Length: 303
Image (cartoon, rainbow, N blue to C red; front, side):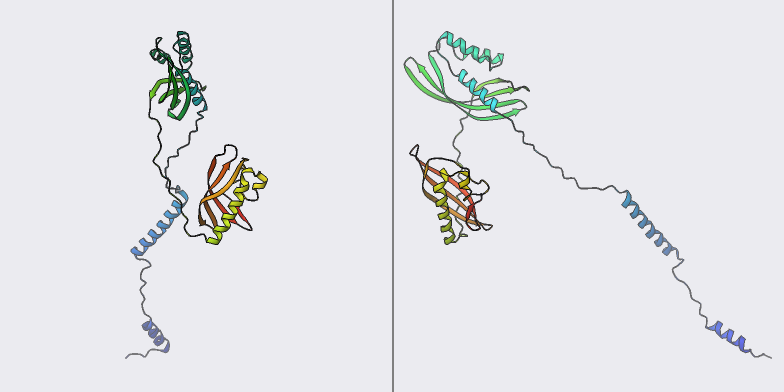
């Protein structure tokens, strides 16, 4: 015979039946544990790299070309003196010997021997230098320079005289003390000619109104009338930043020619020719000017 449950046993049984078994998912699974280890390792590695990494920058290499300024004054003076002595001779033995002795101050021993054939003892002409033009001084290698020049000679034979021009190139060596010597003989060279370059003509672009252009013309006519004889203090009424120098010349202003106007950044750019009469030579002087003007209270030339 089954004995009935007492009240307490019955309540305990009901509580046990109601209790649901819950399974915990993920906390102890190996895959989740692996992911946690990977995350922590990544974070640690990032912190390590942050403290130990060497800054890397992209390096852009560029070639810096330094301007090597050479004082060519000594080379030019040396060349002028050489040209004068080299191209001057007389058809007299004493004068020829004097010329040969002078050339020793310029030429290597090899060139001295070479040039004994240039002017013979029986030469029928005499020569004097009328003009020397030095066109270029070029540094060929370290301490070695080439010079291109033109010499004008007056050639006399008996009672007849004529003039001749020729262009030559010589090579010189300059030592650390600045001493010079010619290492290559005068060699015929090309004479510099007129270039075929034509500059682009500037034109008014319509950005300056007629009224403004008339104001500028009146200002410039007033300025150029007084400009030739104006002192620096007087120029200060018209010019800023020493844009134009005082010239102190006896010129009489005549007119402005071919003015061209353009407005740029609230300033007026002017290209103009000022026509003057030179009272000393009585010739007409045409001077080109490229000016920048601005107006606060009055017009001023600022460049």
